[in-house]
Every structure is written in structure tokens, then in C-alpha cells.
Amino acid sequence: MTNVSKKTLRLVTSGVLIGLATVLSVIKVFALPFGGSVTLFSMVPILVLGYMYGVKWGLLSSGVYGLLQMILGATMSQAFAGLSGFSIVIMALLDYIVAYVVVGMSGMFKGRLKNHTVAFALGSTVAILLRLICHFLSGWILWGSYASSYFEEMNNSFGNYMLSSFDGQLLAALYSLVYNASYMLPELVMSVIGVVALMAVKPLRERMINGNTAW
Image (cartoon, rainbow, N blue to C red):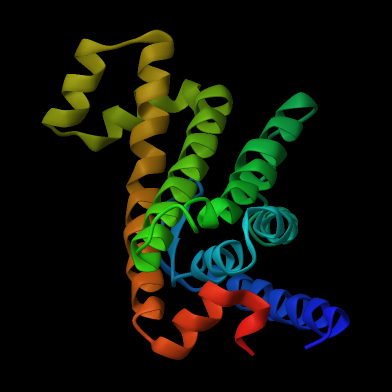
């Protein structure tokens, strides 16, 4: 296969997988009332690109995906409603651009670990945890003022404990952590299950390990 053919194949494959990820992102297993949801393996195609073609290409591909998610968030769910000025910039960066770019780092352990399934699963785990950190920072900075009402509405021992034990910025940070982890951790588990399942299929495993040279 010539270099031109390899580049064309990589572009086509990336376009298809980014499109697939976008479609899967609107299929929600469950969604939280103030943003955030567990989707039907929507991260898996982006994780595949990061592992198949390496971190650099993964970052580029996930950046494109992040832009698409920002457009969908602004138009379909009005994610930026109620925000203005610098707050919009913070949300655009932390909840979309950076949050999705880091998902492309799924191939960070490729070539460093002998077992490709472990390398892919571990890289995917770290990449999605980095995404969680981005959402956590955004929630803390932009929505921390909702912390008290969030824990009050729980109306249980955990909510009461949080309100009686913490306040101020610490309570705001814990609110963001609890809220974002409640959907990102299930998303992480589903994504890791997805990449492990893909690696169990020999033709797909060879394709992801060898990139363009597999076909």
C-alpha cells in the first residue's frame, strides 16, 4: 500500500469512526438533569482512533469530535444557556475542546506494554479520567454555587453529611466531583468493556495494533 493510499485510508476510517461516535453520543443510556449522560459506547470509536493511529492522530481526531459535540451541545441541548463572556470560553474549553481532545490519548501505552488489550484498556481508562478532570474543573468553576441545593435535594444521609461537614469552595468542588463522576465513571466502565470486547476479535485487534499496515 502506497503512502497516499495509507493517508486516504486513515482519513476515511477516521471520518467514519468520528461519525459513528457522534451518532452514538445521542443514544443515551441515562442523562442527568443539568448536563452529562452515559451514552451507548460513544467514546469507543474515538478511543480506537487514538490506539490505532497513535496519540498525535488521536488528539487531532478527538479535537474534531469535540468541536462537533460543542456544536450539538449548543444547538440541541442549549448547553451554553445562561452563560456569557468568559464563562462561555471556560465551558467551551473544559467541557468540549480539552475534555474530548484528551480522549485521543488512548494509545499512550501502545508499545510500552506487551499485552495490547491491557495497553488499550489502561490507556482508555487514563484518557477518560482526564476527561472527568476537565468536567470536574468546569463544574467547580461555573456551577459550584449549586452545591448546597444539590445536596439538599438528595434528602438523604449522604446529602446531609456533605452539607454539615463542608462549605464554600470545598463543598463546590465535592459537588462537581460527585455530579460528574456519577455519569463519567459508568461511561468509563462501558468504554473499557467496549475496547476489551473489540480486542477479543482477532481481525479488529490486528487492525488496531498495526494501523494502516493491517490492510
